[in-house]
View 1 (tube, rainbow, N blue to C red):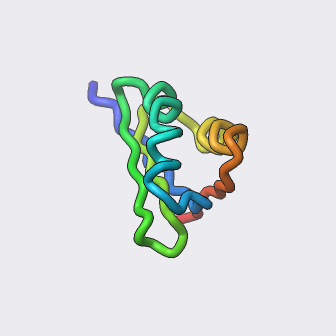
View 2: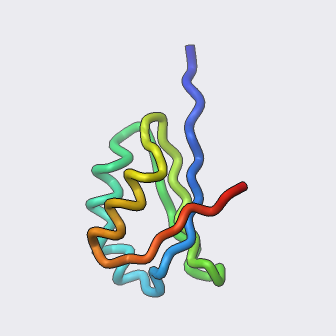
Length: 76
């Protein structure tokens, strides 16, 4: 049976693509081969969107906060 992916959306303090490149290996490891992530730095909230079969929001929040990035999950 096909498992549906969780879609998590966050507001962040990431302003530059250099920061995205810095945390890319961490996010890649977190989502593994079953998920994906992307930033929308054009949005005023500098959105991070994460799709994954196994992650919960707190894992993403903890990872980015440990790396000095403000992050807050956006409620639907």
